[in-house]
Image (tube, rainbow, N blue to C red; front, side, top):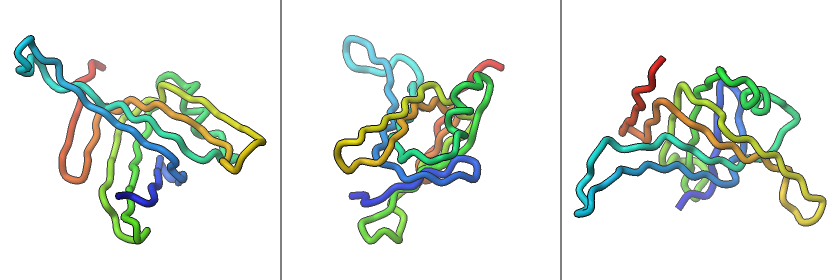
Length: 129
């Protein structure tokens, strides 16, 4: 199991609190795949920082970014796996603060990537220009 994860987006590093990425493939009534896999969606919950780069990325509808999420083993030194993403849009942004509790100020991001790789496995959308 992973103990720690860090997200790097074009020179910025963030502490990852939660991460989800998903793929699916439509099937017929018998369960046989009927088209290419769909996916490339990443949901991240990260610690907020004073920087507004993520907010700027969200409000600029044509901006894409490249980055990666590195999942570390429990020893916090060796890598478990790395998810790389490129030509990625920020399609959702929510910032949350609560004075109660011990959670840091948080940003929830939804990302849509044209290309993703998990270690050596790659997936690419064929988006029209």
